[in-house]
Every structure is written in structure tokens, then in C-alpha cells.
Length: 176
Image (cartoon, rainbow, N blue to C red; front, side):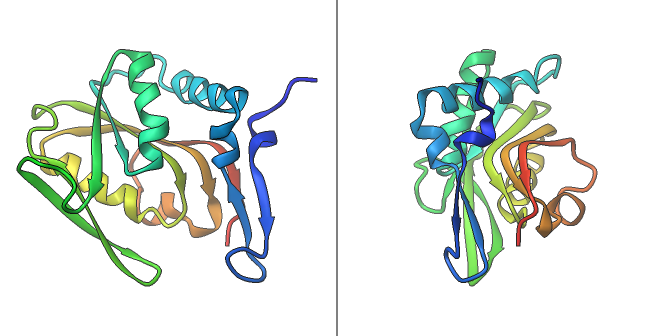
């Protein structure tokens, strides 16, 4: 019987605290079949979309975004943690559960007017993705689609942080 992508997700009850059902996607990545399936599905969702670059966040956005960019013949842009990129950067801070984080992109990541797709492994609150959207737009790019392998719906990131953007996920779970 053929497997579905969901078959490659490992659910770990009570992690990191009692009552939480943690959805571990590292089991997708470590399986040749699961990883290929996820990348192929992300690519399929982008067929017919006019875009120039894929942007992915450190670190699992790199894991999924880079093969998508390669498969579609597009450039890949890294959104990295503060202090990791060597050239002039723009930055965007966002809230975490306990504090803040900052992502950066090179100021010359793409020409103004470029059409950009954002790819990441997971969306929960949407803070990381919204930070990337803000940087893309500051650089004069247009976000044309945002894709995730997994979405935790209970956080309502689409409504709270990404309203008005074309967002898709391959898998979704209730979350929270």
C-alpha cells in the first residue's frame, strides 16, 4: 500500500510538556521516500506560479526550500539568524514564546520587483514567516505564495499574521 506524507510524521505525546502532541517532521527528512514526497508535493503546488526566487528561513526552511528552488530552476535566498550573513543586511525581529529573535537577509538578495515564494517546514504562530514577508517587501519584492510542509491550525497564523497572502500547507494538525 502506498504511503502518504502523514505516515512519515512522528507524533510524540507530552513533549515538550504534558498535553502537547509534538509533530516531528525530522522523520520526513530522514526517509528518502518521505523527503522526496514532501519536496515533490511542494513543487507541485507551485506549478503555474510565476516567481523568481525561493526564500527559506534557517534552518529547516533551507532543507525544503533549496530543493524546491533547484527543481524549479530558481534562485534560493537565505533568511538567517542575526550575525550569520557577511554582506550588508536588513533585519526583522519577531516574538517568540519567551523573548524575541531576529532574522536577516542580504540587501542584494534579489532585484526590486522580484516575485518571491517563501518555503518553510512548519507554521504555528507565523512570526518567523511574517518577518520574512516584511523583509521581502522592504527589499521591493512581492510575495506571491507561501508554502509549508506542516501547519498547526490552532494558532490561526493565516488569519493573524498572513492575512491577504496565498498560503498553503501539505499537512495540517489542530495544534495547541
